[in-house]
Length: 354
Image 1: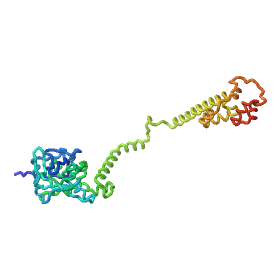
Image 2: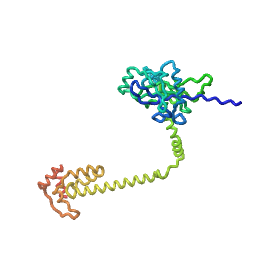
Image 3: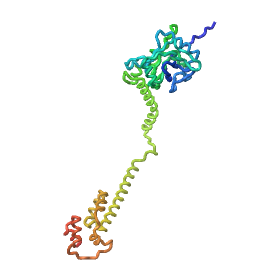
Image 4: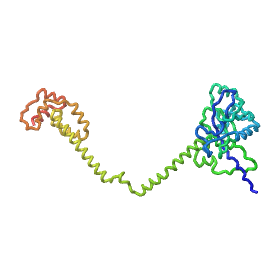
């Protein structure tokens, strides 16, 4: 006679979901009927991708709640889960009796007579708290709800879920029947994980997740880094990206020559224009060339601010052979030019006589 295999024990985990709070005194919904998910897509550890509670499953949930010797607590912001971590008290917002639960087909599981504390009732009436978040154990193979653990009123549904509640599972997980062997444990515990990631001893769940994500990102870059290292060791640069050093040096020389030629041409043009219109004395020609070679901007500024002198302009021949003219002394206009340019009259007279 063949013996049927025993049904394996469910693998439990902890989760929470969120519902809108009704007015004080009205029944509160703990679970919807059928399949449901959290707002961010959880559960991620259930093959079907959803939790489930129906008329067949709920009988076990209600029986476990009714068998409790104490009422189920309704707290603020899941502080019951966080009190060991942050050291803060976890005051009750209300209480639920296990016997006051009712299954409404097509709607879900309700607590018909929630007993709110006075502060919590005032918060709810003023809509300072709007959401209800039950915390429950579930079978990770099927998603079936196993037991209601406690309930919270909250305004921040994003904090609920496996990521923030998984570490509390050990405290709230239902005990396995005595005739079933304890589930074998695999992997490292939280303390070992913190040590491996080189985090502080009081690292939060978010710190651990961030460190694991960074480690994964670094691992993804390893193939690219190995390929870059191999190319560098091979010493075979890509011709499309590199040119010979000799070519670079020749280009630098050509650029220098072109730049010098361009500057020289500009200096010659400026000096010639200055001599032609009387802004430069013949004695200033070499000085103007040297200034332009070293500081083109200074030469331009000088010529721009120096007026053209008719007396000097009349001495220019425009490329024609000069007509000899005896200059014995400077007239008033020439003397004014000397004063404006700071030139000694005798030096200027000698220049004109020459």
